[in-house]
Length: 392
Ligand SMILES: NC(=O)c1ccc[n+]([C@@H]2O[C@H](COP(=O)([O-])OP(=O)(O)OC[C@H]3O[C@@H](n4cnc5c(N)ncnc54)[C@H](OP(=O)(O)O)[C@@H]3O)[C@@H](O)[C@H]2O)c1
Image 1 (cartoon, helix red, strand yellow):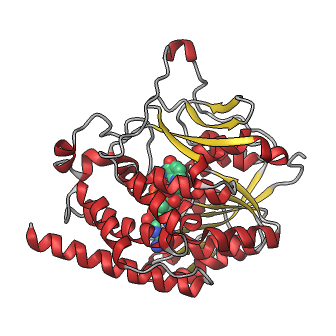
Image 2: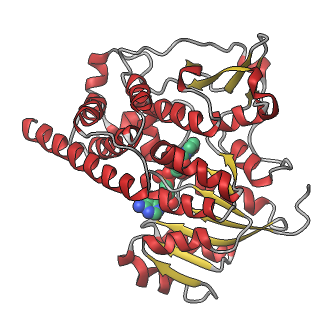
């Protein structure tokens, strides 16, 4: 199927790392895509600039205090302006062919769920939605015929080589990890790292939160949970393998011993472009893979002592119910506290572990239960941050 008419696109989180790379690709093929909605949290200047370039029907700023500023900034355009969390959901619900869910954190959940309920083609970057609400989200996807297109490079890689029609032949999924900036550090060295050091990813250029998640390897813990729901595989059949060059983006091992992988340079515009053009392929500006120049690819098993987040993710998955949402909320609070210089790097995992042991996981019956759990976990994690700042 080709894109014979313009694909109408809504970009939730358009000012972020994934959002801006999506726009970069769209700007290269304006005859194929019409952006109908853009949303951001605080960044009025960039949102207004994007609106001027793309002429959408709706722009939304989640922070209501920025409404007037945005309204003035786009006053020369024929565009509807809205503010607040409910308006972000409206952007997901408006008629469009394709939605990019690229808001960071659990804040992206309501709009991602709204797009799924509409049966949209949903390019799915906001992994926190699946981590927190995996079973609910996958039910909605099936019920409303939503097409989930994974943006995360690892899940996108698996998606490309996962034989859905013969899934009984699949033995395991292997998610690769660059290992982050502290792969070779000792725990003692990690105790002293700053947010600036942790934010400098050796391979990928990403938003602040996911960069810290990559440094703690929590990103991989979240990705194992995401993959378990997305591909309906037991988490015990999903392994993590450190591969510092980030050339093999993940693999599917089949029963007969065949292992299929997707390879490419580490450029998010490859998986984003895959989702944008799906089921076609588009030309992206990503550098082509030159394996002869790279020379060798290396692999190692992640160190479970240096990176306890991987164990915590698996424990949360084994606990089930709302435990992954507790893990996610505690992580979001702890990462923000680390970025704000309130706690140390190693405190992040400690706070998550403690929160998981204190806040009870309950059956994930609906989104209200999830909201209550999220709030309880955030409160618990914030208390620990407070206690640690008192000791500093
Ligand atoms: N970056 C990557 O390479 C990458 C790779 C794989 C997966 N992902 C996943 O993609 C998602 C986005 O990551 P990112 O790195 O692009 O994040 P980012 O650069 O921090 O951008 C986040 C976007 O969400 C908006 N936003 C933040 N909080 C919000 C809120 N409470 N309500 C509404 N909008 C909000 C931000 O608006 P402002 O700009 O106004 O703050 C921004 O547009 C995450 O789930 C991440 O795990 C990212």
